[in-house]
Length: 364
RNA sequence: CCCUACUAGAGUG
View 1 (cartoon, protein in one colour):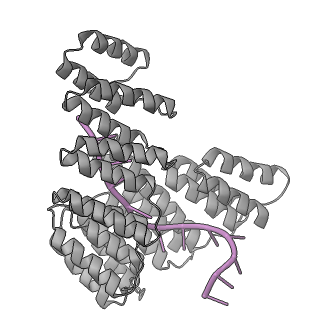
View 2 (spheres, chains in turn red, blue):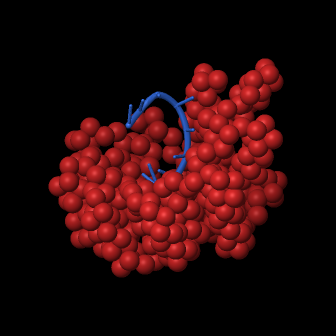
């Protein structure tokens, strides 16, 4: 069973939910019971993909098989709701998110019904779900409830609260939460620094972000590559492209490898500051580093080239994108059409439009 | 306390 659990972990790390489920099925068909570990693992895979239906189906299977449940299973289930809330901010909108949030609280209720005691992670997951749904008040209530049950808020708690503040646009509260986190002894938690820096994005507050960076270093916490991305983003918003690259240099000096996120962040910083050539260079560096830019990165760059009347570059990026195994999506097509319009490329626009119809891509 | 499972984390029209 342990071997299978590890196999499933590998599938999950590779973001291959179908393969993970297949591994689970294989085990089941060989007459073995799936254990709590494996179910939790599988449910978590659903959470990261935002597949709530599958997540709850697995939970039902688990009950049917009379496998013991524990707080981790319920945390994973709450996180299934939370994951779908994150996925659905594009399409289904606010109402769907609130329904999912209620479902998360429903899980919380159910677990207590069956006599499983919530632990800190359960409340943390609830706070995160509420934050993602933009319900800061709800997140604060969950925090209160957590404290009423004598659970100590930890780094996860404060980081989730900080993100909830960001989502709700409450920067003032975010700063208070950050200081509460430090006072509560979470000064060794990298997450709180990252979340606190992210809260300096709107309105842009580079000074505070850099202070948090300094706090972190003073407290002897080693940053990761994501924290640097958060900082670089704030630098870019403060029109400090120079600082963004300086931070990247710091990062390299600390032996951290830039990731696709690092490069995308830098590309966006350049685009937002009208440094399109530099953006293109960073994009190339990303490819050279063997990291594949995703559709977001391509679309942003294609759009920027289109706006800058660099039609040829926009088109060649679309080609690169396809060669890189990515499907142009509605954002890509919109960007290309926009580029055509600006460059008076009626013929190409017509072609593109036909392709969109073929692929049934709908724009507004 | 750690071993195989849960909880935070960006960006595109």
